[in-house]
Image (cartoon, rainbow, N blue to C red; front, side):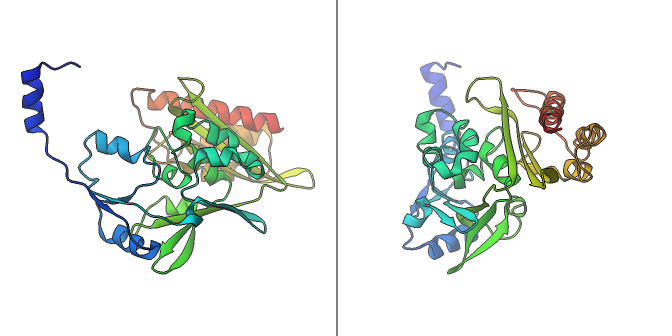
Length: 285
């Protein structure tokens, strides 16, 4: 929409002026305290989501916190798990051969310039239709490592996403290795190859003696944040059969209220989620 010069001046007078403070705490403990005490404070990592909110005039963003800690940008192997620092970028993930199972999800996040900036920690807080990587992390049993005063605590990602209690500074994510598992990730978008997602689906299947023994299934794009589809998992408890696949697809609707936006209606999102879930499960039969 174009404005004439007088109209633009009138609009500018009506817009509130935004004053944004910037802090550079000396350590993560101090940064964590600021974040817990100030509801308008946010950690500035790559800024791909946060700066968009500022440019759109979000009045809730009043305080930016810049943290400097080399550990936040590292990927390390811890026995049977990987620890990925919260400021590791999508480009770093794609360059790590040991994290091949995450490459499809990381590669689906925007163009190369954006992947150079977007961080794994920031993806946890991305608003729909973004946050694709978080869906994959849910299916992979990821845990969030966060600062609690001077020490680190852990919480399952699905619990962390409920965001109850004080706000937490994310230090890293820990992901178990994918030994004896089959992992699938699918993103549906109208703008190929890396547009905003309509839905994302991630699934991890544990195998024992060549048979499916446990499933973890997560969806994005069907609600306010990515979630683990517990109803679907329960429907598959007895094993993969044509009947259990039918039950799993039907159960996805229970307690799920997909949103509608300019990209797609809630009805369409649910139809596509059920379709792609059925395809993945049927291929495993």
